[in-house]
Length: 244
Length: 256
Image (cartoon, rainbow over all chains, first blue to last red):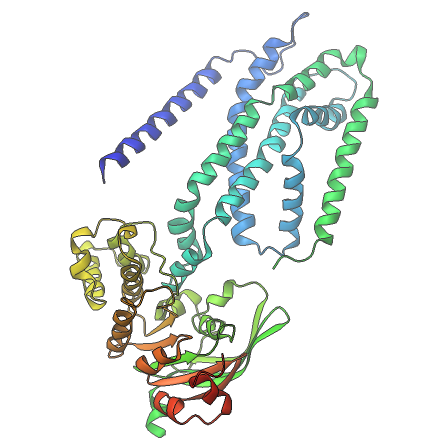
């Protein structure tokens, strides 16, 4: 192995270790319990502690997204109805700003589980987890699919012609070539999760003020819009002609 | 005629193939003889590539592809439900128009095939790599740079590397799908000489749209036109005494 390769590999390894230690430190130092109430004049502590836990969870969501993308791209033919459905939903979801996700989370995940009883801040945490997953996965699926698709067909065919199985072609030829693209997609998704503070604010503001200031009207309208968009995309994904 | 029948290794019977609604191959039947070069000629879009891709089941991955008919390899149906497609591809190798070496060293390129089929001792791999590269006349040129990337090689050398890669898995049949399509005139004769030379150990199917090239390298030739096999027979006969008017027009350059 030549020297530059060793240097690059060690740099990558060191970066990875540093990132891991950073996350570890954050988790270790998050003493605030999940179900903690915000103080009277600030909701900062709860939001912070949640953020520290959410980022590792987003990381898991990214891995799940990569796995989904592999399944869609490599195992299902482009004409498969499930693949077309997921792809059109992914296209919609990647374009939604994170604030809207916050409203969506409040309206769907919080109000229907929490109701208006006002009990349990823990519910907010689970709402956040679900929303972060919905936020991060589509972007990951999309970029990973693009990276897999960028590996030229002739390379796959050359490997197949030597008697390689589908798994061997994928693991020996496709993944090494697509890896930079997949990694870039994961970074994008992660940075999107980092920038999703608006989402947390949306949820926490509601959590803090719901007893006094909630007027469900505005939220409902956003969610209605969103649902309409999703329905449209689903509908058109089936109207679209068969890709060949 | 009887001795010819015995030598047949691959027989194609009444092959029809479609992409979606478009029919690509219409009722093809012919035999490929063992240890001979069989050339398939014809203008572009006449279905030559589709035909050879059927022979090693590469079309399995093509969307909307379907076919009827039989392809018998050593008397066994290639598409029978018991047959493993990867095994078929190991026995019926393929070299493509554009040489595409894998993104690893020259050594690893040639060793990839044997490796995935279970050879993993370095002594045996070394022997296979050397033998394959010697066979294509590339060993002396690449021996010092075996660990280098194939990008340093010329396109002709890359194509010969791809041939060595295909030879390393010891196929029975090797399909060349326009192997000289991307090569310059200096490299083309080397590949042609190699094809004639490989005939001693392998059965070769050679697809080309250069009629002169087919006349130079092949023993048998088939002329495909718009998905139909117009004529099939010994190369000499096909080129000097064609039975069909279209074949005559093609080999004399009036058609296609």
